[in-house]
Each structure stands twice: as C-alpha cells, then as structure tokens.
Image 1 (tube, rainbow, N blue to C red):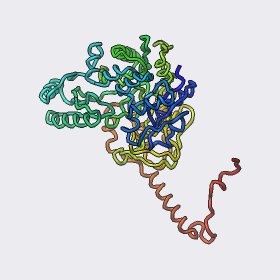
Image 2: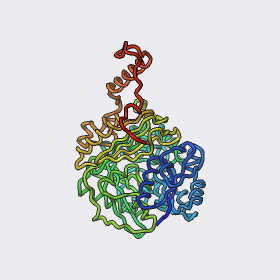
Image 3: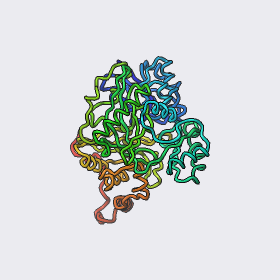
Image 4: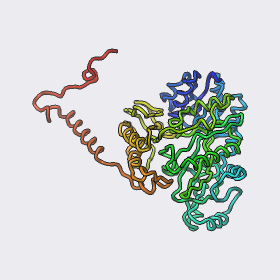
Length: 497
C-alpha cells in the first residue's frame, strides 16, 4: 500500500481525498497556487507544496511542476480528483514515465474515452447502444444537414473532445445549422484545443442517467447502481440523486450490464462513470464515459456504504475488488446539491471574494463536502464550487424534505450562492413527482427570481442597525445614554481559554 499520496487538485475534492487517506493511514501532500496559500486543502494535508502563480496553466495544470512536487516529497502516487488534469492522458503518461502511480485508468483509456468519436466507435463495436448520429470522420455542413433531415430535428452538435457543457449547441431547424456548427467548433477550440464536432439526435423529455463502475486489473468489473443527473443548467449538473424514479429493477439490471460491458470494451481499470441518455420510451443510449471520480459520487457512497476514493486507491495499488455484483445493493434515497459561489440573479455569474461567515448544516443523514471556511477566499481563477451538500433518508420524499431544511440552514456571507434557487427546484411539484428531464431548468425556472421577503427584512435590519449606531441618543434608547456595547466577551457567558 502507498505510504504517501499527492493530490493534484484543490478545493473540496482535494479535502475529500485527504479525508480517506487519513482513514487509511496514508500521508498526504497538497499542491497549491499562490492564490490558495490559505486554502483548506493546503491546511488539511500533512505536507503542502506551492506549485506556481494563480494562473491554472502555471500551477494546477503544470504537469512538470506537479510531478516534481511528488518526487520532492516522496509521494508514490497521485490522485487527480476531477477537473484540471484528471482526464488528461498526457499527465497519466508522464506519471507512468516518472514511475509514479496515477490513481485512475491508463493514459490509453483516458485518450480514447476522452475523444467522443473514438468512444462511440468502441461502444458500437461492443454492441452498446449509442445515440443515433454521425459517429466519426470529417463531416461537411451538407453532411450535417442531410443527416439531421433524416433523423428529424432537433439535433445536437457536440465537441469531440468536449466536457462540462462546452462545445454543445441544440439545432432546431436547418436555418440554425451553419451558425451553430461554427459556434460549437469555435468554443471547442477555445476550451479543448480541438475544433472537431459531431452530430447526435436530440431527444425531448430525456433523462441523463449514469452508472458508477469499479474495475480492477484482474478483470473484475461491477457497477454501483445509477444516478439521476437530469437537473442541469447549461448542460452542467446541479442536483443529482439515487435511485432514479425512472429506473425499475429490470431496467437497472439491463443498463448496469451495459455499463459494465462498456467499461470492459474500453479496457477500463479503476473508478469511472458510464453516462446514458434515457428516452421517454425507456430506450437508453451511451453518451460518454467519464474516466475519473464524479462530483456526485457522495450519493452513491451514501446508499451503498462504499467509499469510492478508498476503492480507487486499493485498485491503483494493484489489489483486486473484494466486492461482487451480488454484494451491491442500495439503501434509502440520497440527493446532492452543488453549492457554488455564483449569483443566481445575475445569470449565475461567478461570485468570488472573501467568505465573511460560513456555517454548514449538520445532523443525521446530512453530509457536506466543503473546501472553504469562515475567512476563506474564493479566487476568481478557478471553478467556484464551495461544497457538495448531500442528504440521505429512507424515502425520496424524506430526502427532499431533509435537503430543503438543510439548505435553509446553509449560511454563506460575503459571496452569493444559489441556495434559494436549489431549494425552489426541490420544492417544485414536477421535481417532487420525479418528472425530471434534461430541459427541466429551462422549462420551469427560466425566469426564476428569489422571494424578496427575507432580503427586504435583512435590508431593513441593516438600515435600522446603521441608524442606531449613528444616533445613539435616539430610538428605543432615547434619553438613557449611549447604547451598550455587546462584545463576545459580554455575551458568551461563562467560558475559559
């Protein structure tokens, strides 16, 4: 087993990996940029190495510097988390050349699954259903128009090297094809350095269902049930849950087998996710394979009781899975909400800054994977995710109620968050009924605005406080001298240092 692991990431996922390493008695090394000097992941690790300036290209994406940090500290393995270098086949290859274990699949698998066209070809050869469309080659505008006409609109243009909702355009008519094709290709070049795109049929009333898989180097592959990921904003998931109300035991078994076959066809080893599109008729199609730990992995951990990061480390160390498919069962229902520093009233624009006060909910069945604390800075240079708030309960209705209550007690002052928005989504009748599709947010919350009551009360309280502070001889205290000073030393009661 590894004695020391370097985490090539930041924020809540770096903290999450560190926690499991501590449980396993493994020393940890954090890497951090100059902007993250006071970040939580740096403080939680046993060692920390500054790898460069705030610019991700000079720090968290600097492969040479990260491998150098691993060598300097004697780390035998690197966990990439998700994002940054987690799906970069060149980084996995460099780790192998440096004789450092990359906790994830091989560089070859990452490269092939990262190219959506290559992945589609592999799945077609393995008889895994794929979304109808153009699967490979260089296609002209004429080809795209002809295929779209045969399949019927709407269709979807997607970046071959895409991810995170970038390089994607929905095309509703032939008139939109040329502009959408050019826009998707431009965005793909900017985001991935690869302008290739392909065409798929776009399904309405479709669900995004993914299966967590585990595979070891001895040829054992299992799945850990499904996750419902249809609540998305701009093709980015924001609420996930398991189990899915659209998946019955028979369909779960079919899709689970397909997910395992997909992993085997790819030659996959370690933890990964096979993503499917489920149409309204119960037909499922392979979308892509994510060759890393998913943001939404806590919901799977809560219903199965399996620590996925621990399994990743064990498999990377060469151990075989101690679990069989028969060992996997789900208990209860779990829901996860992604808490970002972003302004829901301003197009969910990032809201960087200093967190003046941070208080997360707690209690039975509540888990909060966080990377921040009171006084922490949210840099403008990185993804603004603060935490993943997850709840677990016996039933879906109980899980929804628990999450709404947890969100109500989630306090962040200093930056904006979409907590109110998430609570409104969960409280929506369509969500409660399980009628969730990939266009859910656009359909039900395109013109969302917060309830102004609490904001108005907060503003009034602030104004009243300011007025009292400036006029100590007025108001309720008029004629009684200056207002008393309420410091913590006067209000905490009996206490000792």
